Amino acid sequence: MKKRTALVTGGNRGIGLAMANKFAKEGDRVVILDLSAEPSEEASRVTEESGGAYFACDVAKQADAERAVREALETFGFVDVLLNNAGISRWRSFLDTTEEDIDAIFNVNVKGIYNVTRPIAGSMMAAKKGVILNTASMGGKWGQPLESAYCASKAAVIELTKIMAMEFGPYNVRANSLCPGIIKTNMSHDAPHADDFWLEKTPLGRLGRPDDVADVAYFLSTHEARYMTGQAVNVTGGMIMY
Image (cartoon, rainbow, N blue to C red; front, side, top):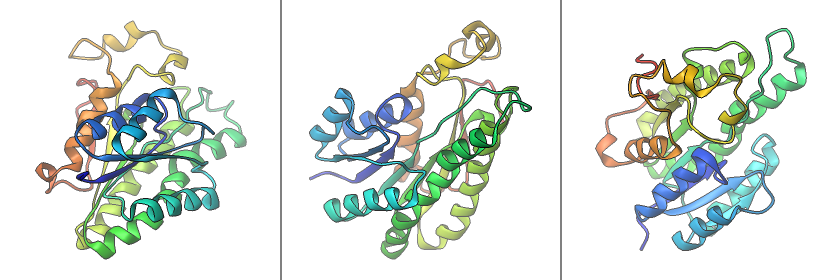
């Protein structure tokens, strides 16, 4: 018997895959939604061994996201933990940021949360239980040059999470956001700054790993975090402290 069903968007690699691994290791069934038509080898292993499943979908498209969520709910009955992790970034100066850049980033990072969460939150509210975790970013609190659209979208995720906490709290459904710092993933490889630039700003003296974020996400999903909701939790090695 699995303890819970955890659904992770953007779980094919990086932080999302680390979350999937963590929840599976703790005995939860893991369902992954990702844009890739086929799961990565590791994502396939995690879903199969945990008794979960992989559904290809574009979270930015409402019909596609709702179709995948409906299939997940029909297969597993209930999602106990929703991890809205899918996200994209593009490095552009403010003046070079195009309408297409803005639409693409906000459609995935913000609209994608609406598209996936609405059908799941309804079932959580009816059952009076559930946890929602949204991956925001340090950039949502502390913006950086060349990331105007990305940072604005992640600030939106933080505020959106607070509203979720307010609206869902009376139904015993908690919502928190995670604010990772510089985490060594494929996305961070495209950053214009070298590692040394960030290391100088990090009291712990190292950059983050995907499992650093996954461990915090798991804690926030547990009974031990039962009185936490509406929070934007930093996982930055001390790079920011507010």
